[in-house]
Image 1 (spheres, rainbow, N blue to C red):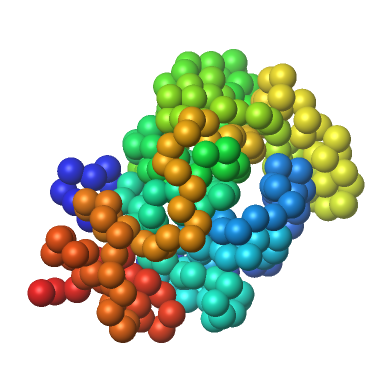
Image 2 (image 1 turned 45 degrees about the vertical axis):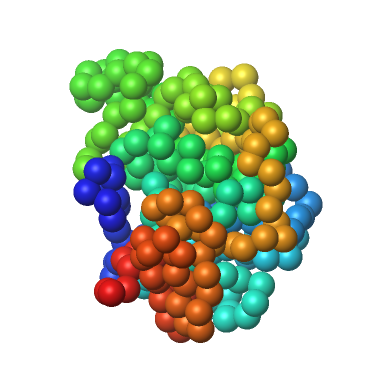
Length: 299
């Protein structure tokens, strides 16, 4: 990582899959996020980038695309995703950070990122990188954690939290964990070159008491009914948006090289199990089916 880069949240070696998701009482959250993703995803396409894919929890929802780039900063997460999804040509596993994406400009005709941007200290920089890899008109499905949610508003009114949920600036409630105001995210997306087409309010019933009192499918049905209210004014803890890459550049490059140098942007040359920058800015390995841009090979 470049010394000037924002700090990165690294899930290397974490138990995220087993400690947070599997058998941890989050079936409701998982299901309503899938409902939202289905509502916003196009039917299919050539190549989609699943950014911050983790262990591939939601990657199987991208079945309409010919090729799926499964990208995460954690190699261990990618190995879990590989075990979950399989090692075949349809999935390309890439270890890289969002601030230095090694994917060629215009090389994807869709992108998805959920439960990731809340770890981003520099949202505008991350969105600019994502916009660069998308062909004109490509959809970008983004989920973010909203600070203007009902629980936060109630806590603020009762003086049980110091930060104001109506303030536009992000709040970092623990290191590298941010909540965002919907208006702030709308501005960042617009300035990065996206037009937001649709917005869904998701996970209104993310409360332990409600999840104990009501069946999961009942909560999912209620959430499904409420999600469209996000178009007007989301007050949910999670917001899903469908955003379109506007403008004429970069030109679509679905048939060109997939990887570019994360430092200079030049297409990388494949040499066996490595890819290299022709301007000698670095060489990176492909180990066990995972392209590792987390750190370059030594000279």
